[in-house]
Image (cartoon, rainbow, N blue to C red; front, top):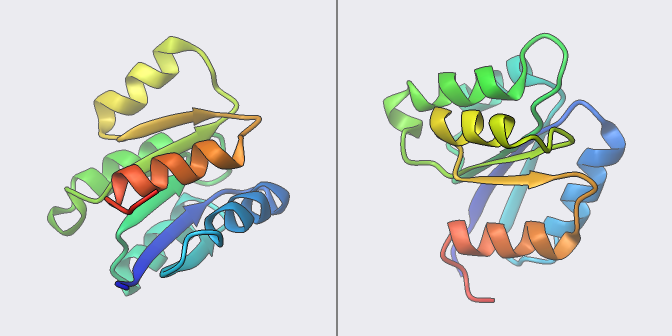
Length: 126
């Protein structure tokens, strides 16, 4: 079983816990948490990640800025990015996808949604 490093960038500790709890159901994932986009970037520069899940609305640096910075880094150009946000408007989704996000989940989140998207993007068996 190969190991995957997954970065969760979310300013709400409760929301982070929920996502971590969901992802722990998939064996072989190493989960790293970041409290905002700047913290996320720091962690990205120190470790190689196979997938990033990020919120949009965060202090210091929002998720869309993070997505655009990650996509401009050749090391992370192909890494799947999942947006998890309260922003349900279609223009928010379109903007996130245009910036390079691979999936967009609106809150309140369902555990199955996170698991399905993670398995699909990492090509893991269901």
